[in-house]
Length: 215
Image (cartoon, rainbow, N blue to C red):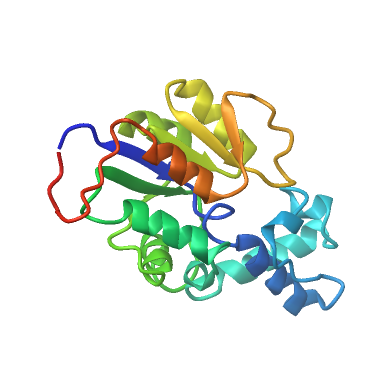
């Protein structure tokens, strides 16, 4: 198939609300002094100990609880159901030439192996046959796969990806914990809709409404 558009999407902080799950564990463990963070926009720092009322030791305890939790990654809720559905309808079907990879650095927990947990976390929301890549070197994967559009919420990942892949369209999901990213070559967006629209506006984008034929 010619002219495929290959895209890479981070999971947590872009698709899934990890912050809510983490804060729920903190709240259960340490009580009401640790409020549940329902909205990702209320997270104001990447490192929890810098802004949330837990110590380094308590953060380690919570991470240990998460690692011992069965199928933790399958339990995460979507940040925005409507945006995810729009993403799925635009790119997760046989009528388009977009190939999607979900790229994540999640850690293993009890239960299903990490790869399967990531798959299940997406298929439960009706994403068919998700392609998962587990790595701490996202910039290398973007280069190796020829990814044209990449989105993440971690500033450092976006910087490294753009430096190593200047031709890639790199997006950062704008939050209060990545405002330090001011590079105009990294596009700051507030929702997945902007990401979807930019890909649809690519001259090579194909969507055959009534056919499974791919050019």
